[in-house]
Image (cartoon, rainbow, N blue to C red; front, side):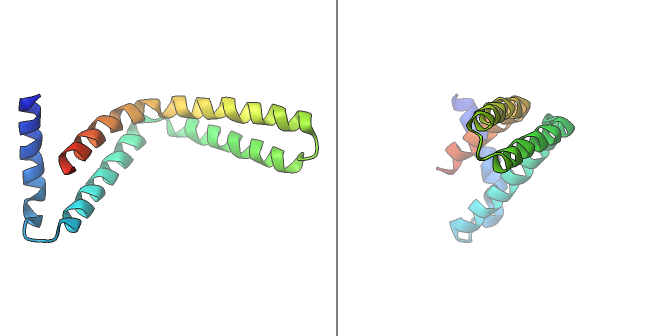
Length: 113
């Protein structure tokens, strides 16, 4: 763990070197932008975008169904079940990107704190 921490300290020292004479808020903004770009790239390449789009449209359709048939309890309960199942599918499709993203984010949070 000591060696990992030493490597991470070196990486963050290099990344934050241009901001050493500025207020700390600028370094945090810079790290936040780098992190956001990293997350977007990972999310784009680690997920199946077409399937995600289909699942999102299904969820939108179910929400529309709730609004149209808001007077029928049986349809509402069936639609809520369908929304929950579809949300679980959506989470499953995003799981790989979440796992890839969480490790660098945690390491970044540890370094910044």
